[in-house]
Amino acid sequence: MLTQEQRRAHYAFIQNGFRLRSRNLRKIVESAGGWEVASLIAGKSAAQLQQVCNPDHPWHRTIGDKLARELEQRFRLTPGALDRP
Image 1: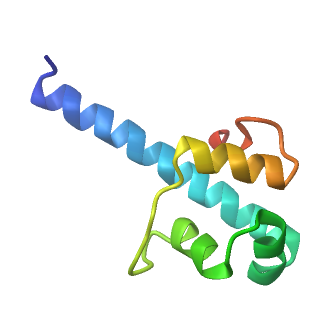
Image 2 (image 1 turned 60 degrees about the vertical axis):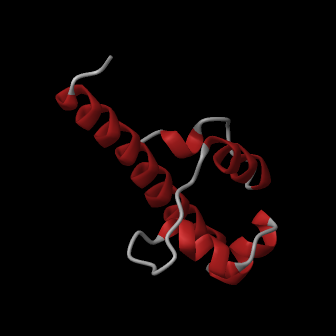
């Protein structure tokens, strides 16, 4: 069983990963030419992409493993690209 400190450290590690994915996806959206173009490439609505890219969005969602791999494939990135700084 994990101690409270270990749980906090694990939670922080997971949250940092989600933030990294969001930050990397924002860079990809910018290089693609904006939300509308990126949404066409990703096969998602611009609103969905904004929800996962902006932690201040009222309905913020995280980028899980499945979505991360799907987006990498749609944008023709190497697997794990959203997880790298």
